[in-house]
Length: 217
Length: 217
Image (cartoon, rainbow over all chains, first blue to last red):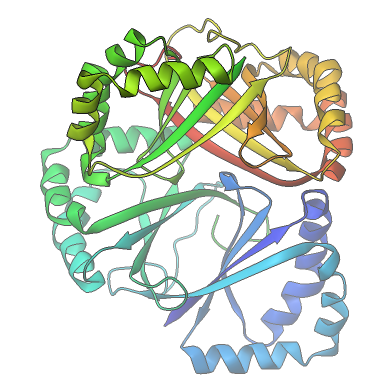
């Protein structure tokens, strides 16, 4: 399995139109041809007015076939005509889930209320597999102590590689800060950081809010 | 008057040591040479482990003279040598506060502990003056109605031009989301959005947490 993680930079004054038209005219065409949308978000930190969406595929072959199928649908051709007016930059990367990642390994939990999502990208100095193994062994048991789940853990397969991506779902942003404080005071977390910390060259994070038509809420 | 906003990317594993060193010796040495600290923060979104600090100078010449004097101080040289390896990258820009910015040569008075947000708006060339004029007449009263705590609003003198930098302060991030959502039906905000979205090319937002020695708490 893999995730195609896409970021579209919208014009600030076209966001509202885009979020009305896309679920009505674009998304149904993609879904008709088997595209599996996992989550659809708007950024609330970093560069704003960005649509971030995660798509699940069995692999690169499935992705290519699915994209070819919806791209050749006349309804899709009709929909994309409006795009140049709505966004001006598109970025995509492949994320490969580790075996302990919820995303990419089966059905996602259903949430009643909207949460806040966080995508943390770390540049790893040495050995992404080593970082992931240490994370599984030492971090996962500690993370069970906090209420909100980490729902995705991936290595980055294209673009800037030697990166891991962690995806969190938080009940709220204050709950996130409280969980960070709790982890910061936990000796088991300190023991984990001692092992994996030196592997981390840079950490970057962005906060996102699910849109109404996002399966992940 | 000019405000020097400096962003240092710290080694993730040495960020805490760097902050402690600044608290214990760097700050006193800066004061000795006439530097006025307005605020000191660590990033909580975007690239993490970034130390963002703001300094007030009467003018660029004072900044130049005082920094030269400081750089010749043997105690300062020893301090800088001790911190070498902890800082991965440094960035600064010179900003000018607007006449209605609460932050000028000194930070505005705040009470209790808060969380800060820095918003960076990039304008189409020529559109910035209109934004600042509307901010004075429309946004200032709208912010008061909405309960937003404006800390500072600056234009950029040296760095990426055609940008406005806005510092806001929040009691918590959940409250921030609530207050933002409540502006949706406010006529002043509606009017501002309609005008500004035609002027703005890009918007960025980052959450900053004050360090223990920050004058802005």
